[in-house]
Length: 383
Ligand code: PMP
Image (cartoon, rainbow, N blue to C red; front, side):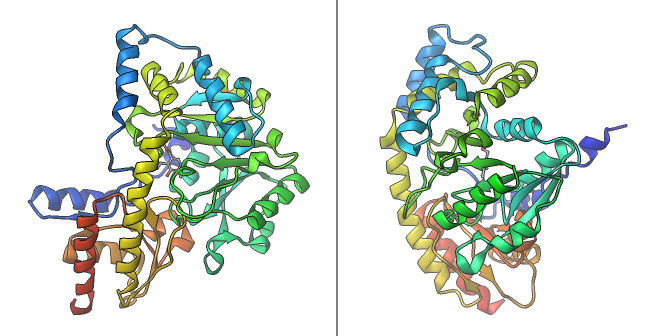
């Protein structure tokens, strides 16, 4: 028999939809895919060249479990220079980002304790809680206010079992950035109620307006904040599985113990790729400029579709419009778009109850595909 813990972890709610998309593609249908969760760019050549060179130099063995020292130092330096977070190498653990989130939960949550997660928010925040036997509790983001923190709602969700608040800014799926007011609400609650904060900053580089602020830079928050970040989105290297966690020395030590007995260390060559990526602002910038053009294109296109109500995202490569069409829910709507218009999207309900009546469109696809997708959506009227 399978353990109760593993049984509590659900498969992806969108798996049927993805299977259907595959099936249609295999039949030769030209699907316009707006469902991609990663940059459609190649990993920059200079990053690959460096990692390959390191492999030929013999860097294909175990590294220190917390990561190679040069990389830990460089990540700490980046957070000091760019994010105003006073981190040192001893505050950094190199690990794939998603595993870093798992380690964060595992380190601060006892079974049955609660973690507050955003609604709508990224799908894995719920299931990682199940994986450590903790309870995920949604707090609402206020759509009317640009998906900011709703103070009343989040306060009402805190009880004696609450141990942590997770924030994700810039956000998958909404594309919004938490403003100073929202961050202050989180800070005050964390201090008042003695909670940890997990701050997932993986989309920090893909920003079009404003700047993301790292909550660990606020006075008194460094010790109670676990920041997670990585290179998947910023440098189009999802398959290299490389990211990091920044936290107090004590937390990093405990996480390192777990890493030693699970992952051992992040892949050696991926760590070298990350080292190079930290020097490579240029490729990241070029990618973001292209995303910016696509954002304009998809925003203006979707704005013209009568059943879709859209706001321009400040960041990420996602746009998360609300829709109202013949009373369909988001799963039905995503199915309809796939079957009738051959467009794939992600139904909003996968991101939490507040995601209902929304669709997530990823604009990590070519301008031609965006134009063609919008043309198809214009046919909604005739369905
Ligand atoms: N956080 C968020 C919000 C994400 O969207 C993702 C990737 N989809 C991750 C973390 C995990 O990133 P990685 O694949 O690099 O582990």
